[in-house]
Image (cartoon, rainbow, N blue to C red):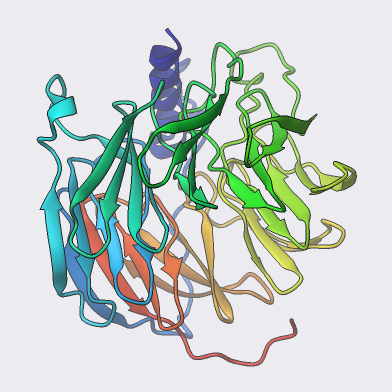
Length: 401
């Protein structure tokens, strides 16, 4: 029932945000997607190379994202293709098709959905089939498969020879990074209705920080899974089921032992990791990941409004409402700019100081769904149709912070 409800909710939200039509009236839209902004471009992004990774993720909800190290960029498709590519040229180092692995006999595809996580030797990918896979980074060989209870849409996170996994059933568990065997698990009761997604965990100071679908931000011990503290940053209220959603679907950001997190129908908060003391709270409802640089946080809310916030106080520095209801991605920081994508396949470049657009690129007519991965020289972005695009990182200019 819960999975069915999640799929129904995702459909409703898609109708609201992407199409802009009302399920209650054929005449008046509930939400209207803003027109694509028109402006004079002052920066011209350069695409270094483009390649294809299987058939991408299609129209499915997914948190598949590339990963990089000093040797390669790694990417995967929903149907089971995993590839390692040269960072500068995009040429294939190795590629493996895991769509026919034995444990998927009753499914039409591997259904990769969460990842890619990594350590120095292995890649970690979660699936909608309730599996976590470890793949050797040098040859692309499958190292192990571990069955878990629930879909794995959030990216698995590696720390201290453990892979931390958060499932859509609400379970948080630790797997041995070398064998895939379970070390510990922490079960959490789920609300009857929640958004399609789950919070990827963050690790710091011997603790695992993650958000739950009931609006609680939680910390457990990395080694044992023992709960340390939990705090609500959203509480269910309102007359309808949609009003009462309180999911924390973003990955908490930890800077100098302060956790920054955001909830749907809740708040944006700063909380001390070790003491659980709340430093500030601001009424920004959202579900995308937070970007941080210098003394500034960059967030989106559930409408697609973009904000720059002071890290110390949470006070607004600037806002940009021009991408409202365009189903925007999370934000990435690229030197003096931030970048964000939308459902029509445009990537927007925005000045970090004032929130004004400086460039836009049409990259994929099927749409963008994740923020780019930013490295020293490139931004790597995966599109819904499966294109992996490397964009040259802009040259660094002087900034205030």
